[in-house]
Length: 177
Image (tube, rainbow, N blue to C red):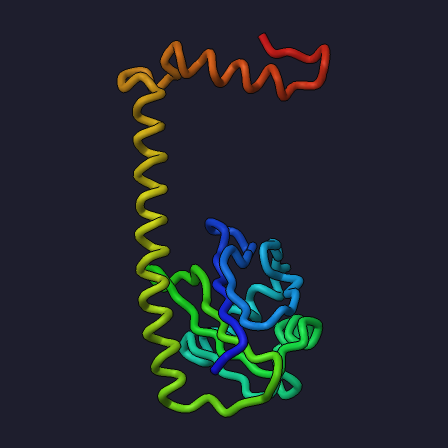
């Protein structure tokens, strides 16, 4: 009995997070959904410390009691009463989280709630890892088909496409030779 689920992903190796997927059972706008947030160095360190402090599963029954001011501010701004965040990692590197949220009530997260959230995180993160592997493989194939294996330079067709893109993006009158 939750009001919504948000999936949060890290963009590459940056300190930037976005919420590409979310599902809310209530008609409540969430400002952070479908937007990117870039953390400062200090904010990022605090965020990772917060995640590690709770071994990747942070449950908050009342957002007013949060000690992480950044998370508290975002939660209060969006009207959250309580949430649970289960993070996923690849080779000890933070990649994202699943946020299970309640807008309508504060709650105590039971052991069963936590177990269910961890199982959900395992399923979703496995899917996201497979998507990432597929994207990496696609980029590798694109790279291999567009470059000469010996010289590692663009093949003629790829060169023409890239040159056209570059020339179209250059300000008028400033073309590279």
